[in-house]
Length: 91
Image 1: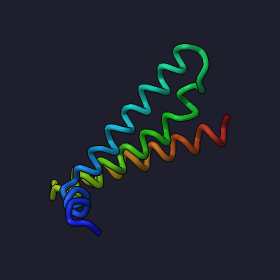
Image 2: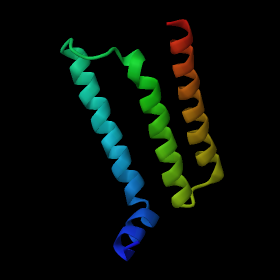
Image 3: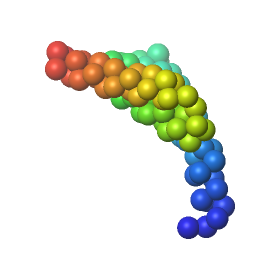
């Protein structure tokens, strides 16, 4: 692996870039829904939030943040996953 790519991944900037892309996806899906052409938020919000919190947890781990913050991010990702399961089970 190239040193530049290795440094980019290790620095946490890759996680930050992914988080920016998740925010852009949120905006894109929201605008489509508001225009009446996209899926409702209950179809995509839970997996999007779960992914975002997992990336936040990764970034926190890379920056040696306190374990409590890492645990909160992982718990939030788990709750978002469970909310998604609930919407799929109950329609």
